[in-house]
Length: 189
Length: 147
Image (tube, rainbow over all chains, first blue to last red):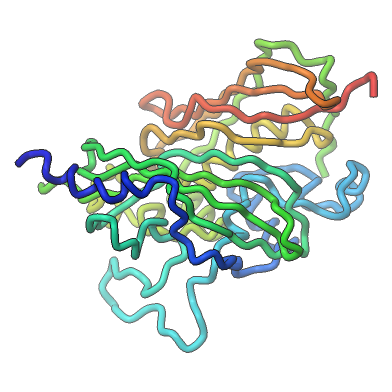
């Protein structure tokens, strides 16, 4: 049947509203730091003194330098390499690391049909607090908000919306983050 | 350090257009962006890998594209503006290496709520093929002259 691939997504459609996390915060790899913020600004050529000058930040009511809002997920992202666990195990030109914190949010979810690729398609964020130098952010929760199977120009798969809270080291909610991804299998060439 | 003029809520009118910014996408810049925002998915820095996934070439990652909107908005609202939310940051097509992303913004509405002075800025990113991100919006607050 031509539409069999859509039926394979029904368990995920039925799971809309479910929190697929184990409830534990997933801590970002790095403390928010001036040096890492500086590097974040470089490819954007983003000249805003709130992000590199403490005096300016304090003049505007912040306790210290703040990170750009768009860098939220950079700080909430776990490490690629974990000491003791090899990351690069192949010399194939396009070999992938054994671990990636930017993997599909739906990876390792048993209900989901197998897909080989994914990319992000939509982002929505409510920013509730500034991200300060010295903060350590964590991601909490992974709630499936939507699942819509669809064939696109790149393949067959489904668009899914995932919602997480981003909290700081004091457990204060910094943001509510929603990402829509497209998980798919490419068309056969 | 670049000094920016602060913008007050009373100075903003619905329909005001933000100055556009251009972001030429070279391999160098995309690699630098991946390192800066830690999204090392190979689709963002490896042409051969990206093409295997169905994309025309390596393309800018979503955090880098979000940063383009934030810089555009920040240069308009000034340092006293506070960004509150991002809405409908929909990536419609790939922003591939060799292209230039142009950000455009327009003040869609302004209002007062719970004593705070809000503006909603409608944003798009365009490349050689047209709109590639959006239309979405960034909602921010500005200082008021009456405060």
